[in-house]
Length: 265
Image (tube, rainbow, N blue to C red; front, side):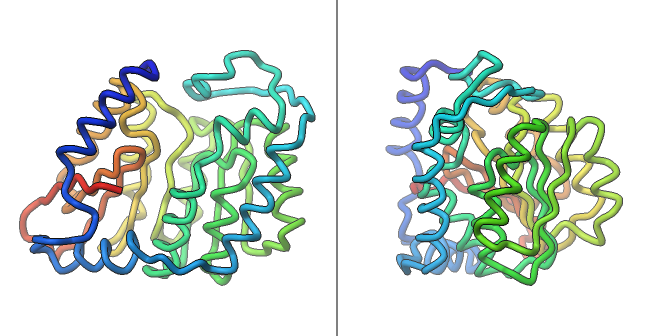
């Protein structure tokens, strides 16, 4: 992973070179709508408060868990014992991006959602609340973390989530086979190049014209940047949006030529 200084320099370069986040001069109607109606939607949805109350509760929970980490690790907590508070602080997606993912699901209305990397279930809760009648499948490698996530889903009375536990290398193919489609997927489970590219290829079996894949931490390391470049260049991808901390890919045939956008957010 990059050091905090390296990441700060990369973020600064992103900020000064990215397209403005207001959509000015954007020629693609689809991307303009995404910027105007999703990225810049300032509505304070009531579901936000529910999830952020959960986050606050977890941030104050000092219970220590024994963690099995199959990915590249948090980059911060390298030991196998971590507090719920520390996991929430270092592994959960920040409010800004959790709420963006909520708005994406609310706007595009995917029927089938797959998340790779449940963690404590904060982003999962945003996915579930954005479309309560969607089928949300979420995957987590750690047994101890899975237990806490399941309890969090019960506490929020989320009824549309199925949590699959186990190493993605062992479980993803069978999970994908069991889904009729993958309309929306958030991939935040393994910050290494080869697994990320492989998971992308496995997800392609069930993507369609309207599918949206969101990749977390695309500039976290040189490996993740390389994986992002591979994903963008794939023949099935017609449009990509780089928001620095996440990358989004679309498969819509309305894009006659591949388009890659870097947008300030």
